[in-house]
Image 1 (cartoon, helix red, strand yellow):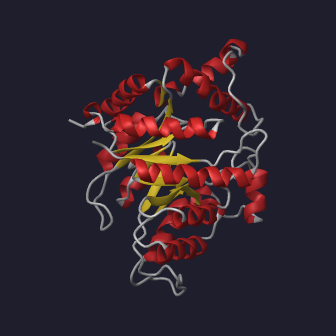
Image 2 (cartoon, helix red, strand yellow):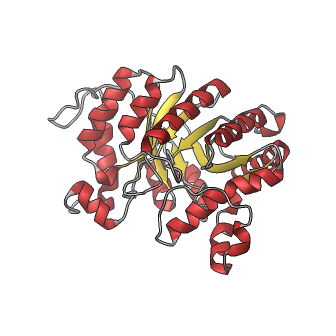
Length: 333
């Protein structure tokens, strides 16, 4: 049976705030731990009214401190926004506080628009073209004998697992070249998923960190007791997705049962473009759709996402997903 993990954007729902979002995040992480999910990742985004995980390392400490065994990670840190030394120190600190439980996923995108990116870095002299060099610099900070004169304290000599994240072929090639595990953002950008998986597996070079390819794929699950209920729950994320792609990011809206009846062909096309990475429905429906996705991709692990307006409904969705994961149908043959 392949492992399942959780991807949390720490959504801020309409009528709520970041403080409540953080309480919800810890509540979901504790449930994920009880239900047997392998890891709990948080994603770095900036300037988004509906996403509160901007200070990703800080929020990871909140989650790790409120749980006992589940791995806690960044899915991911957008490295163009940061000095590699700062990230080495932050994750060296996390690994020292919570040994053996911290993951570091690294992304090439800024996780924001260009204005926000400039506010983060103050200048854009260093950009995503430097990503491979920044990753190697960061790996060196964690090595037992760094080549650089500056030391990450804490950080040097700590074995923090590192992942390359991607939504295109670039990340697949870099992960393969460096011999690192690869996480593809198929939950929101599945168009190049199959090609990226093929390239990564074909070009993978074994390393001291990883002997053979390991692929984790983002997958959205909206599970409820009935198909009808799940189809209503997913409309919050559908609205948020359309708002974001239309340049109108906002807080997570409440579900609307009639939402699909009030959008045009362009919006329907946007939703159709990501439908392959969704399971929406009752336990039987989720089991069937998730199993089909695993069979098609050969994923080694799934990172389950799903922004649901009501926190209790979101908890129930992940409970159902965990129950589905116990079924023999999810075993990789």
